[in-house]
Image 1 (cartoon, rainbow, N blue to C red):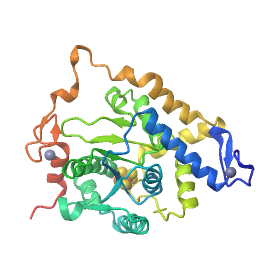
Image 2 (image 1 turned 135 degrees about the vertical axis):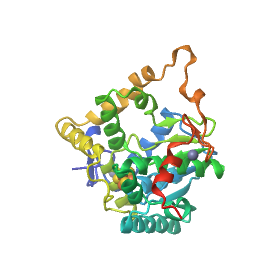
Image 3 (image 1 turned 90 degrees about the vertical axis):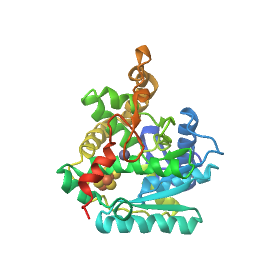
Image 4 (image 1 turned 60 degrees about the vertical axis):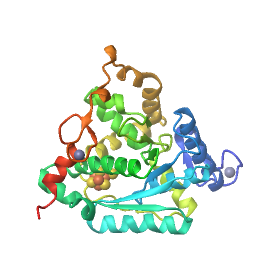
Length: 304
Ligand code: Q46
Ligand code: ZN
Ligand code: ZN
């Protein structure tokens, strides 16, 4: 296997591009894919104040590294979810990256700042933890960005993640989620812009990027992920990809290029974001009197 660019021995093949790369040209490939995603979807400008949601895993650390290399100046923010040793180790990886690369990492801790952890939320709601976890991440990272003057929250969702979410949304024809499934969610009153610059990179590529760049990341899977529907969808898509490389990218980018718009039309000016009120507890935009995060907090945080 030889590098497509320089013919030196290759260290990784990317079958959907029908290409293999040496370490240097693989890094170039990753940068090109991120640059293209940012350009194609008009995600941000170099002067924007961007904060990367850093989990300590391969995707978010690769994203932080790639954005800095591409000339952006993102800070990072780590949200401690209180998932035992897994969260402690993840925080250590995020801090080590920030120290080694001399970049700013902010930290939010769910337990000390909000009074609950993700395992406690799962126990209190008798639901799978990922629902409470996703809700908490969206709410707290958005609030952090608004409170600290960041225009944009960048997350490490990659091609595999987004294709799996798309498959789930299509299987249920969840039109509201399909309308919101996009690598850029623009800012709106009460919402910072959210972007996903890794939508053109698979998770195998973000892992390889970290290894080649010497970035030490949390390799363990979240212990609460078992049973997560998206893992099953990822397996299904990997089986398809195995048989026919490029399927995942064609599925996701075909949707974004040709179908996404069909779910975002609001005839009669019926834009749901225009109907949002403010949470009586925290002021976040919501369709109910008290937002979903504040309702979760009441259930999950032990009363004094
Ligand atoms: S951290 Fe949270 Fe994930 Fe763990 S509990 Fe589920 S959503 S799996 S990315
Ligand atoms: Zn090469
Ligand atoms: Zn609220």
